[in-house]
Length: 407
Image (cartoon, rainbow, N blue to C red; front, side):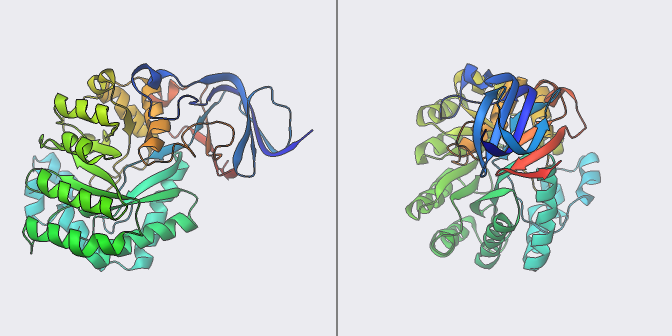
């Protein structure tokens, strides 16, 4: 009998997410390809076999009776590396201060930029490792991480290099995105800063990131400025992503389609025509329900309409100092309760579709033979418990690249 490294057996529900190797849409998002009383064999960091009643000798055997087994969560939109915290803003929000009010009082993104510029590499790494540890403990095995709290070449490069180092030293896999165009530094006009991003930053950081992102928003970067940045990124091999239509509808969704972005993120205010163009061009919508939650907004992205139209949806935490969420289980819960996604849709959006949103669906996001063994064992007997049982960490076991991380 062949020997494997890990054998998980008797799972009440084994969510394989097996299906077409492209973003899942419409009813496909409800198909988790569940194996009841399922087993999974892991060897040399990969999924060796999957099915029922598997018979292997194993170095480690996990009896998953009464448990649910899922792919590791994928978080495709984070601002992982930053210094300082902004808990002082919470009481200001509760008193009715707007984000712009807080910005004028010394808070907001420029507070974080100043703290991050001042911080040493060692300090940023140690703070980020704590966040990654929390993410992994709650089931996130892969994440995207953006720069954007430097707004100058030196600090943007520092953040991207830290992402690379974290990817090397921490079990969570990290994919980097350059977001130099996160805000306009106070000493420049928007056009002046766009020229700096295009002429000075992108050519220097091109080997430190996979994606190029921009905050396309009223009073930040226009559609025309955003297009210039994303097209320049493409010339240097960086795939476009875009923060689109979060606060007002700027036609960011349509821009994502025009430049061939892999994803457009937020989409709270996107118009129907823009969504249709995204569907036509195969752009994934990454929804971030944690952001309106922490901003105390009463409006969320219209996930139900987008899914019914045929837009592939992924979910992400938007981890940042204004939305300090490291737990994708909570994001799934917000998606169900506040965006009316089904449990299965939210799980698909947090695993396979999320992997598609960072171009890693060949490797992760589903449990299939030959794929990387990023596997979770949850202390619940069915996937409906993930959104249903709120306020606890259901993750009992984390396996990353075939290695038992948490037991």
